Amino acid sequence: MIVLRSLLFVVFQFALTPPYAFLSVLTAPLTPLTRFYVISGWSRILLWVARPLLGIDFQVEGREHLPQTPSVILSKHQSAWETLAFQQIFPPQSQVLKRELLWIPFFGWGLALMSPIAIDRAKGRAALKQIARIGIQRLQQGFWVVIYPEGTRVRVGQQRKYQPGGAWLAAQANVPIVPVAHNAGLLWPKQTFLKRPGTITVRIGPAIFPEGRSAAELTALAEQWIEAQQAELCPCSNN
Image (cartoon, rainbow, N blue to C red; front, side):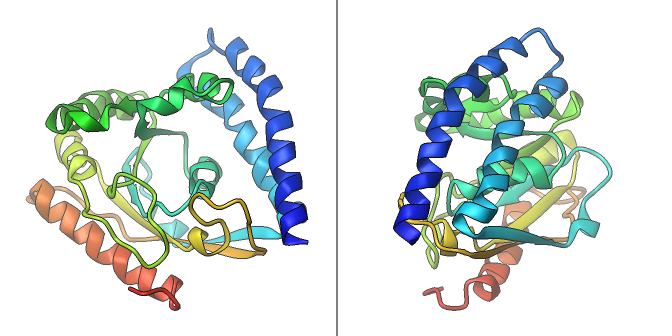
């Protein structure tokens, strides 16, 4: 049944994406925030279908920690699920992502119109400067900025080096960092066709304020909180 349900979900996703891509193109004349609300409907539909079809639901802990103003979200990245769910859980956002995603037919069209921060990860420090420069613009436009500090998806129980781009942006823009942990990888694993039923937990931590702290200190504080929560959310991992 898991195989069949996972296959049906993929079929639905492929059927939904082309027509929604054309709808997304029609939003081009609208304001960036309005475009986000319309185009993010694609993710909301997929999450809605995932409940009865895949048996995957989610719960959110710590909503009370969210600041009232646009902030930088630093999150664990385990699967494609959080890239969908964050559009529903958090205020309108600009996600930092690899520019190659914009080249995907249909999917990339809508993504490009959601005001992302598309970077060339091979450019190192130049990419960090791009995150800071465009990120400040996005924050001023009313977007939150979502950054996965490990730079890519990691399997449950694994950890990569946390990069300072998100903390650097928060320090430059003088906005809070919101650390986020979750266990989506247990049900919706990285690069895996099968998706298992269950409830994903997203845990939002207390805001970390940049005043008097370097980017390295901010990154370390976010990493410490996120990884401690990951150990609780994924107790069967190898962490």
